[in-house]
Image 1 (cartoon, rainbow, N blue to C red):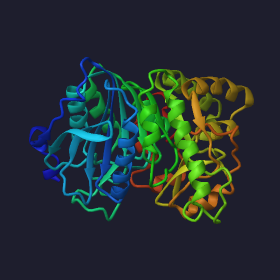
Image 2 (image 1 turned 45 degrees about the vertical axis):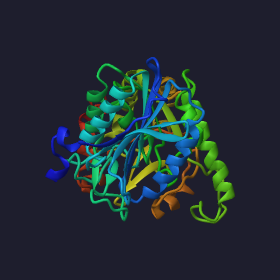
Image 3 (image 1 turned 135 degrees about the horizontal axis):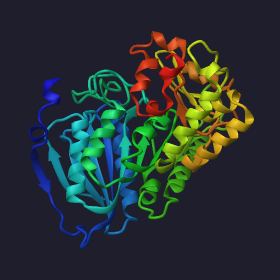
Length: 419
């Protein structure tokens, strides 16, 4: 462990630097976007494909728009590096000594370097890699939760053994960015569209974009999404989501032998559920959620019986369902008038989403359950939320307790319901 947690000044020593003076902007850039690629795992081959897509997408960018990548890829003869992609080429490549992308110190360093070398009027961050939503463990790096999935030995034979908890991620981003709030954080990773994650990140970014569910191994189509990430109006997130969603609608239809769940060709409603969260509205949504939970206290308490039967859920870990669609669950359990009041706050906080009745999953249990989901497009908001339950007392750690480490719980206060 110590070799991965050495001081940041030693962790990142410059190995070589190839500088190209041509792409340097004459003035402060309009936007800099860092794509942080945690690819020292079984996603390594897809990293190379995505880099080629980014190169294609970069050809439509202006000189004052900086697309920067941090890459830690398994099976590569290159050490981790930071580079700009300009007009389809890698420039200003900065090779660094070995670190692991799942370490918050590495994320902090990559962001600080990006901000120093490519200062801009606004910034965006893409988190590329494995993820498991809000799930949290005691050890920030040596764990099996949250974001990253680095093997630590350069291999690509597994999802990885090193991970980053979301609260520590938020701290690292905040430290790196200082007073400069990100325009967006886009999670191109599984289960990132969780209300607990969005709320944890609310003070460091204007928007959180991602899927509450698992995403396909290929991830985003960056030749389309790269230009979207530099749109300067607040509709950029619609473009990103639509391009992502519509791409997989088309891919699933043309590659049916590869993309299906139960029956080859069974692609009705099959894409990737996605959402954009406007963080300035999250305080109000948290208060509204606290109020509506108070109206169904008898159901959400540790002695209650919250109705989750056949409701859409997005996460499964060690055989335990979790991360239900918050909109669907509250609609099914609260009164119509209370739900409508809450839903008004929800719509402001989640200005755009795309619903998918089915999506790719590595879990046969989740795949089988999808056909039984009773939630419809009108019911689902494509944001997940954890609802405590007695079954989670058997998880390690106890999820009913670990969820309380998130700032979301400062408002919700699950402990008042006996959890």
